[in-house]
Image 1 (cartoon, rainbow over the protein chains, first blue to last red):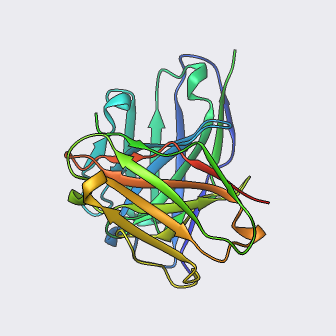
Image 2 (image 1 turned 90 degrees about the horizontal axis):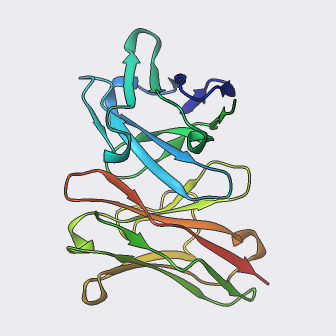
Length: 117
Length: 111
């Protein structure tokens, strides 16, 4: 069965970077895009960007341009999302999701990133 | 920037029908597919409608989606409401640059 398993919760200081991983199983990792979405506590979903695991091509939301980097390691079927220059407003649950065509069909369990001094 | 606007909350009684709207800010909402996600507290979202009106396997046919080009909006309709339908619902589409966009979410209360 398709699974996306994310890395554990992180606590970071303002100005630091965080790298969240998303390990895929149950399908061919390079066949579908991976998107990243975040959700602050009590808030809505916010799209961050996409990555094609086959080519490594990426596309980011304007809000995160210059601060976010999405990469992958195809040998271990794992996608990564790194966010730099963290601030308190970046405290949120970060999700990876598989996107076969237009919609997010499988989601990771989420990774809580807390930014606090 | 392209935005999707949803009502903050809706409520209805069990067994009734409720419709949640999602209005596009510019352009034609019909230009890109609209999806709907259900999110229960503490859980990741799940898809209830994709490509405007398609239901993933396992989603009951009580859930349906539609597009109204005249009002530049999409709608999620849930009929025969059950208490288990109580959740947050988000519409999602893409802007002209193929960047993802989510609506602000609608809290459905079944009382």
